[in-house]
Image (cartoon, rainbow, N blue to C red):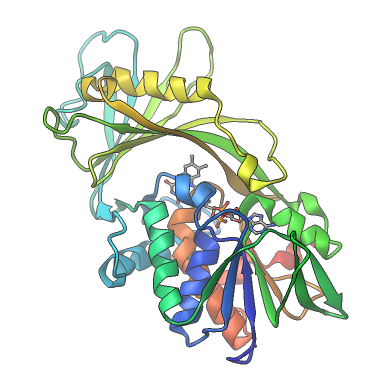
Amino acid sequence: MVDKNGHIVIVGGGIIGCSTAYYLAKAGYSNVTVCEAVHIAHAASGRAGGFLARDWCDSSFTKDLARRSFQLHQDLSNTLEKDIGYRRLETLSMAVVDKKSGKNDCSKAPSWVDGNVQHCQKIGNTESTAQVTPKLLCEALIEEAKLSGVQVKTAEIVGMEISGKDVTALKVKDGSKIECSVVLLSMGPWTGQGLAWMQKPNNLVSGDRAHSILLQPDLSKSSIDNTALFLHYKPNYSGKSLEPEVYPRPDGTVYVCGQGDSEPLPTNPSDVKPDPKSCKTLFNIAAKVSQHLSEAELVAESACYLPCSKDNVPLIGKVPGYENVYIGTGHYCWGILQGPATGEALADFISSGKMPDILKDFDPSRLM
Ligand SMILES: Cc1cc2nc3c(=O)[nH]c(=O)nc-3n(C[C@H](O)[C@H](O)[C@H](O)COP(=O)(O)OP(=O)(O)OC[C@H]3O[C@@H](n4cnc5c(N)ncnc54)[C@H](O)[C@@H]3O)c2cc1C
């Protein structure tokens, strides 16, 4: 439990840091600083797809978190001042082939999906699937939190000052210090670095790289609707199936992601770079699906790291052995979906000192 005047420092300005800052501000905590090494939503939270599903996590520990967050996204789209690119989606899965053969069973596909696709299946509808533009969401959450006094500081945190069971200050790379009453480590795949400052194993959190591209189709020629595509493509040169996802956005751009690899996480978040070959593969597959995409302008190529915990279950809660340190990470491919509910629950935990029920399966003490 923290005094309303106590200084809460959030390390990392991704979806988890931004959501927690927002819900702390809503609960009346204004002495909050978000320390971000690069800029808000610099990493995965600004580069993710933003696909949201109400019940796709139902068979995992994150069922309640995902369902609560699906609702919160809808609420945020109504209450945040800024547009966050939220809308409900139709969602299809389909196979992409080099040459169409036999009957095309894709009558359910919208007209812009006019390429080499087969075996179309509806896997979500406007009741169960939605999207948000992750960067817009993070920025809108922080803008609103700032109105209540929350501050954002560009600062790479490199260590901690510890007294007994409390972290008393954070060390910044430029040599300065930030005094704190409570700390939240929400550094995504880099959260292991923060754990190491407290003599915890730094291999409890890691990152898997994935790629994305952003396309701008010619809007005068195409009308691309709110249908997300989950693709399966087996190139004839390799036995491995590629599974890109295509998300048309309300602003007329089309986001395509996939192409994971084992490139190690760089120590510094600003050193993440995409592999141009992986981005080209994403473009080539998208081009097979739709002529509109094949003729689209390539606006951006990107890579980011999915944050992963050692047991593949998010780590959300109090760091054992410390009175005033919390962590929130490990949401892997569902961090945008589950971010708002994670932030809401962490804000509740920090302000009340009591672990909310929704976090019971994510207690970090299971691994440290
Ligand atoms: C290609 C791709 C597509 C995805 N699509 C979806 C999707 O459609 N739906 C979905 O729900 N999820 C999706 N995800 C997953 C989602 O993006 C992540 O789970 C989520 O963004 C993680 O958020 P985070 O706040 O934990 O971490 P991050 O977004 O990684 O943020 C951590 C922040 O901490 C900062 N930081 C690190 N170290 C320090 C330090 N020492 N000092 C200060 N700051 C520091 C970093 O700069 C970074 O900004 C996708 C991920 C990828 C890679």
